[in-house]
Amino acid sequence: MAVNHYENFPVASILLPRRLVPAVEAIYAFARSADDLADEGDATPEQRLAALQEYERQLDLIGAGAQPDGPMFARLAAVVAQYRLSLEPMRNLLSAFKQDVVTHRYLDYATLLDYCRRSADPVGRLMLALYQADDDHNLREADAICSALQLTNFWQDVAIDFTKGRIYIPQEDLARFNVSESALRAGTVDAQFQGLMRFEVERARALMLSGAPLVKRLPGRIGMELRMIVQGGLRILEKLDAVGYDVFRRRPVLAWHDWLVIGWRALRM
Image (tube, rainbow, N blue to C red; front, side):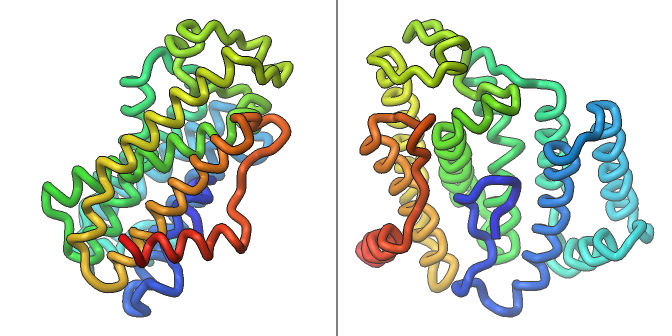
C-alpha cells in the first residue's frame, strides 16, 4: 500500500507483523481518503477544504475521547487508544493536504521541506510509534528518509504534477538553472533542465543517506522493511540519472528486476 499518492511509501507489506495490520490499515484509510479529498474528483477548492476540516473535527472528537462519526474514524479511534498514538502526525497530514488545495508553487527548498515535514514525515513517525521505537534519534532519521522519499516522488513526477498545475521544484532553483515554466510545459530536456534535476536528485539522495543509519538500529521486520524502503527510493533516483532526467517521456518506475536489486542491497545493508 502507499500513503498519499506516493508509491515509495510501502506501509503494509509481507514484512509487517500481522498484529499491526489492522492498525496500519486504519491509518492508511484515513490518510488515503483525506488525500483523495484534496486531490481527486471535480470538487471545488472550497468543498475540498470543507471536507478536510470535517476530518479535523473528527480528530478533535477522538482527542477528546468522544465517539467519532462513521466506521473509518471509529477504527482509527480504537487504534489511537490501543497504541497511545499522538494525533499530531495526522493533523500534520491534513495540514499538508489542505496546502495542496491552495499552494501550487514553492519559493525555496526550506518551504518545500516544511511541506514534506507535514506530508511525508508523519508516516514514518506513526510507524515508529506502532513499533514503540519512536525515540528522538530514530524520529530525526526517519524524518530524513520520509522527506527524501517525498522529494524522490516529486522528481519522478515533475510532468504529472505539472499537468495538475503544480510545480514542486523550488522557484529559486528554476531561476538558478534558468528553467522556465514554459520549458516544463513543452517538456524540454536540455542542459539547463538536466543540471537542475541532477541538483535536485543529488540533494534527495544525500538526505536519504543521512537517515539510512536508522536501518541498522531497528531490529527484525521493521529494520528489513525500512532497508527495502531506503533502497527503493535510491533505486528510483538511480533510474532518474539513467534516463538523463527525461521524466516527460520516460518516467522511472520499479520493475520486477529492480526489486531483485533492491532486495540484495537491502540484505547487504
